[in-house]
Image 1 (cartoon, rainbow, N blue to C red):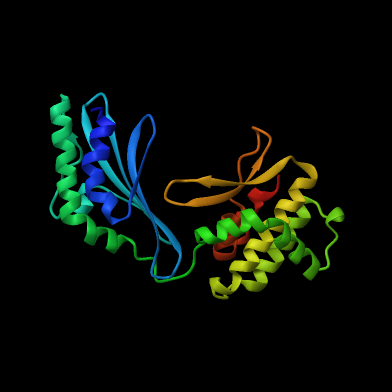
Image 2 (cartoon, one colour):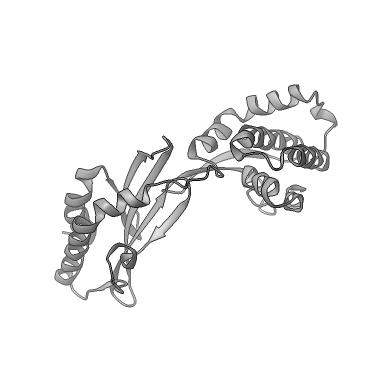
Length: 248
């Protein structure tokens, strides 16, 4: 068997029965579980294995997105453990390392997965559902915003759009995020519409394995992808200067 076949068989016997499915690329092998957290939000846990070729060690990392992103190693999973990577030099030793990880996951995994699945108590974050909504509904979100505020898109520049966004955010500062979530998505969609007048750009959904996120991507190497709703959120939370980066 190849290393990945060994991994899928041994680790799969532990993780697949509790809802994980396997995946791989040229560099690593992983097992991913999609679920709804206690708030009913889409969440994912990923157990990933990779080797360091120059030192012949097998590593395991556990990543989770449940309201926020977090990453863990063996020391987080096993009490008093300082182990960071299991060494191997032959296929037999590689299999023994995989079996050791399987034993760890069998003993500590269920309780640990349950623990890290808990979302933050506060609701001051965007869910995967929000990113999907922006990606799929950006046109209708922008139309709603433009109609409500009686704006003429043909007369609005990027600088004008940022000024409008700042004005509305200042009016909403201090309110609970839950009351501002839809507004921020509408502002993001509105900003995207304004940018499309002068730049070739589109909304793109990115698969980050633990979660999906939506950015405004430009058909130009000189303009980076913009995580617009995050930038607007940070401005609402920490100050309007954060929005100056949106003036392109």
